[in-house]
Each structure stands twice: as structure tokens, then as C-alpha cells.
Length: 451
Image (cartoon, rainbow, N blue to C red; front, side, top):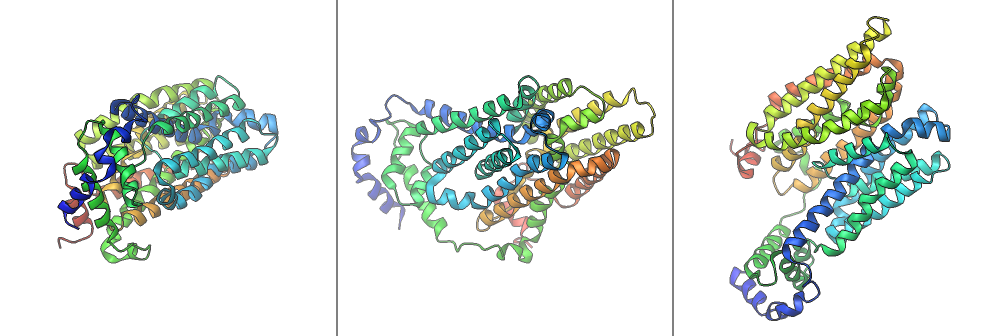
């Protein structure tokens, strides 16, 4: 259908003829307020993701003591949120297609709230495991990255002040706030166009732009783009393994696998165990790491567009590798009964540096690069494969950490250091610089369309 036909349809639609009826339910909420509430809703989701990631570290000693969990049982508890995340990530796209983005977020909030409450009122490890699994499932449905550090820092700090049960109840607060905020946020206009709900699409645009705005052209563009996009044949996972997509697939999956095997999820989940093994105060150490995370992440947001993706990614991975090496040597000296008095402070410095350098690049840049290197026809299936890889290897690393750490605390961190060093080489050789380049140019070079 030609553009003028879309314009004619929109101009003659009952909703456009009677703008007052379209917005009379939302007169009390202007477009600026809708944007603010939408941002707050996203931030709440990010806080919840961070809280889920960091909860098991400050809660470890309290849970193991109160419920009598063994190291093996707590390893299962600590890693189960990643199992839930795998399941959630697998069905997130399909769920969003069926019930919309807003509906998916409500669905996820139900599981997250239920999960936190099961943990808070747990009577044995079955309650804990089910709650952790449900929370992970909710997080997997709506994965957030950039603001996770805030929730991570919040739960780290709170976990050193209150009991693990109270901390779990506090973890549910962002989910409740998000669920309430969603009542005031319009559904995604593109999803509404996709399912043919044109009147609701127009109403959503008015809520976002203001009831005096002329949204006819924007609505027509969204409908036209959606119809064009739906004409593309749906990509299958087998198509992703064609030779022309090999480079982008290796980069996307490779960055996620290397990030996880550098130990970040395990270190985040069991930070208290590491500090305790180094004979350092878990309370002080956790608070120091929590306070450091937020300003470092804020700096990284500024640096990404100034320095480029690749340099910041390599600096971040190198910093994580050197930090792991420092921690490994500290535990090695401790095992040899050498310089035991300096081991605690050196381990803390290593952990602080590790977390700071991770937040500077490896925390978010792999996801940013993933969004830029895949052509639109395979972006959905490629995103699913990369996200699934991230969650799966996150579970592997988290579950095996306590066993590795009991086997050799120094060897565990030497292994993480080697992987981080490999990430620097991987980035230098295979990862393209995407700063200042058009998406089409990046994707064409990655898929060899220009060769």
C-alpha cells in the first residue's frame, strides 16, 4: 500500500477525527509525565535484575546458618536464578509477541514478586530454590543491562545491614513499583501496529507526544515499517550458521562466553565467601564494592562514545585479568603462609579493581555490540542464541565456583585471569569498532556483503 493510502486511512479513522475521546482518560498525565514514568519503570526493572544478581553474596552466611544448607545446596541456590533466566530468555520473544511488551513486564513482575516472597518466608531449601528459580525466570523475560549495577550495589549494601529475609522483601519492592507504574505507560506502538490495533496505536502516540500533536505521519511510518518488516521471511536458527554470518555469530557468542568465564557472575554471587576466605570483613568489603559500582558505571557511559567500543572493551578485560591475577597471587601467598597480614587488603583491592574495570566496559558493551552487528533479518534469532549462551554459561560458572574455590582459591582466579587475557586478544582480532559507523555499514562488513 502506498504512503498516501496510509495517510487517508489514518485521517479518516474515528480516533483521529475525535482526538478528545482518544485521550480523555489520560488528561491528567501529560507526555512529559509519561516519559518520566516510562523511564522509572525501566529503572525499576533494572534494579530488580541487579538485586537478583547480587542477592546471594551478602545473604550467604545468614541463609546457610539459619536453614543449615551445605556448600553444595547453596551453590544450587546461588546458580538457580540463571536456570530460570535461561527459560525466561527462551520464551521472552514469543511472550512479547503474544501479549505485548507491557503485558510481558507484568507477567515477569508476578514471578519476581512471588520468587522474592518465597525466599523471604522460606522454611527450607525447597522454598529458597523455587523462589530463586522464579525470580530468575522473571529477570530472563525482561533482561536489562545498563542499570543493573544500581540494583546490584543496592542489594550488596542493604544485605550488610538487614537480615537475608528482610533483604528479599526489599528486593521485591522494585517489582511492585514497576507493576504499578505500568498502568500509566502506553503499550509499544510498534507492537500495536503489528497486531493491527490501529486505534490503540494512535492513542499510545498521543499519550507519548501530547494530545495536540499531529501523529498521523508517525503512525503511518510505523504501520508501513511494520508491514514491510512482516514481509521478510522468518529466519530460523539454521540460517544463523550460514558462512556469511559466521563472523558476527562468533563475535556475539564469543563475547558472552568469555565474559562469563572471566568469573563475573560467580564473583558477584559469592563475594562474601571470597572476602571471608581472605580474612577480611565481609560487611566493609561488600559496602566498599557497592559504593564504587555506581560512579564507575556512570563514567563508562561517557567514555563509550568518546573512546570507542573496542578500546574500552580491551581496557576493561585487561583490568579484570590483572585484578584476577593479583587476587590469585594473594591467595597463593596465603596458602604458602607468606605475607598473610597483607593478603586481606590485597584481595579487597583486587576485587574493587575487578568490579570497577568490569563496570567500565564488559558489563554493557558486549550487549551494545550485539545490537549493532546483526542484520535485521536475523537479529531476533541471533539475539536469542546470544542471550541463551550468556545465561547458560552464567549458570555453569556460578554453579562450579564453590567447587573450584574449595579445590584451589588461587587456581580459580588464575583461570579467570587467563580467560580475561584471552578476551583482550579476541577483541583485538575479531571485534569490529562500531563507534561512528552506520548500522548498515557495520552489518555489511560483518556479513561480507561488500566483498
